[in-house]
Length: 348
Image (cartoon, rainbow, N blue to C red; front, side, top):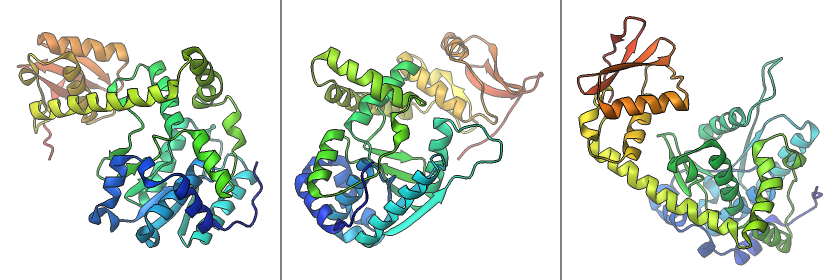
């Protein structure tokens, strides 16, 4: 762990910005940040205290000086590392104070007797905190993160939406915009530039343990994959993510143009005739997200429902919790209970 020392953080930011000029940051994110309307928003920077997030904070502070009074350092303590977590928070607070940036933190307090949190639960708790304090949220994901995520999503059988994550600009519903300007940079570039600039950061020792899937990918799988490829496989993964993001956007635009979901939340199968199966799959997934109750459908059950929808024959499929998908009259409808009574619900 690097020891904290007295550091001239504004000077570090200037040196880092010289080593990593604006042109190295994602083009789309730069264009977004330079729009006058976005400059009037509060920008929240997710800062853990690690090298990546410290580099992100310093680069934003240096490259967008007019935005400094609207910057917020957002630190979330998962409460999993005892004194080390408290030291992380104090370190982030000191960096924010040295830069003249407001510091906001929250600590996750789990109910007594609760099991150790999953990765998904931890992400959700942190995201909820971030969204409370800013609509524009900056994250320090870099090229190595892209490769790790790609390998993780491959193992889970993800489609283009999952495989194209993390995106440089991501709209998270109507609540926030997520910005990732460092996707073109490698981890070792960031740490080398920080060291040369005289900065320090905090090391999380749990990142080296095999408790979480991402850690196992990072330390066991990714190095072996890069060695086997005998080329810059991480850059290749980043390029794949970009291409998949383009494909995903094209499929999304196609489905929006077809508009197969009615105001009564019926999936109108006639509008999907003649389109590729990828569009059918996307439309069915989008329809299930609008269900009046939580849907419990396995991958095999989803594929069976998709095949039934493509055939267009009357059928009825369980979605769990006494909720059914009923195909009749050329459309899929939600129905409740054993009787399969229809649900009529309008959406805006």
